[in-house]
Length: 536
Ligand code: C2O
Image (cartoon, rainbow, N blue to C red; front, side, top):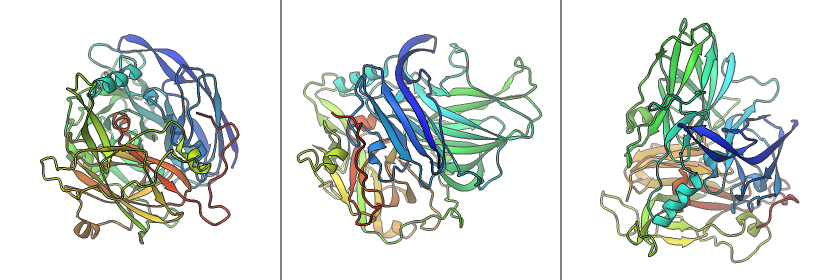
């Protein structure tokens, strides 16, 4: 592979959306930020220079970071943040991956505006396992608040209540036509009749799963989370924060303009949100004054449409791209994920209580130094490795809250031997709010071997697991009131974050980390930290 150098200057920039302007934190002054291009096998070096008043760190979401956890990026997990005026070079090699991923800030709520695409092309001379599209286009979905996003979350934490929902969704940084406030520069994709286009779609929104569709055009799904899938055609895809999806469209109309939309999906809506971001597919030669063919967003709670997409995903599982699903399991884990209430004497608006979130009733407490350093240098007192493999009392949700709602606070990790295999069932508790939780695991891809509604039943449900061609990914939606089962091999030594990719749930504590020990072999241990690793 080649060496690719990038420089990311983190700077403040004024941006105008929804007829008002505000300063936002950006990389190199762009929102969304620059696309990072590389090929499988390349060594990527990104020098991040912090010119803003906040502490910063950048995560390369979905990059395996084999033995290079120091470059993973989540603040206080694998590194101390880059302080104002400081810089850090993220140095990693892309191993065994090709497709679309993205990078984003991994501290506070800076991810709202600090994000951009990662496009990993196959090795030189290696074709896609589908016909090469005429052109490729990155499509980043996001969310926009009129107020400062740090103020939004700080206000919520003070009150103990949920934060305000965003004021718009965006496609490549723009809401498109919205409520009389037509913003300039909605995204346009120019297409030529008869040609095919690959859209590399990324959900970089903070808190919302989104539907995506294009009027009059089918989407052929070919890849998710930088893993090829068996291609299939569909009208509407659903994409959770942290997920990426490559689709191919064929420009099979004579001419015209066709609307592209992104609209919210919430299984059991806790808030009504009908804001739809729009963009256009514009056939060359069509007058810009000609009308746009519209399309309507699915209802916000269109679970059937969402499942139709999710249940169609299968690993390609070809000779060249086999699905290496672990069949023998060393660690069988069962984690409940969900929201709860804890007391908060100072939370006036919340009547003395606050919303919290937990995994197996543990609300994760961020340390003040990085876990990976503490692990590497054997610093005592930073974390414990007693994260429970099961909830404190047997979970059985029948519709009324069970007795075990209380959470404990702790910086607890779960220890895994090098190269051991893990089955993890993620059970949504739906105790105080019924929502899907897109759970993201750093450092690994996993196979989604099963999914169901209600309580997971290990005997009956395991029989139906797909161990042949389950979809492989890095972020999975745990269905509201249901469960998913994932499997992975712990072949990457280090400390790896697992959390809900709805930023508000992460803030509330829906997170934990795995500690993967070194192996005995020469290439089986975490590499030493780089010299410029930031200090806390
Ligand atoms: Cu995309 Cu830990 O995040």
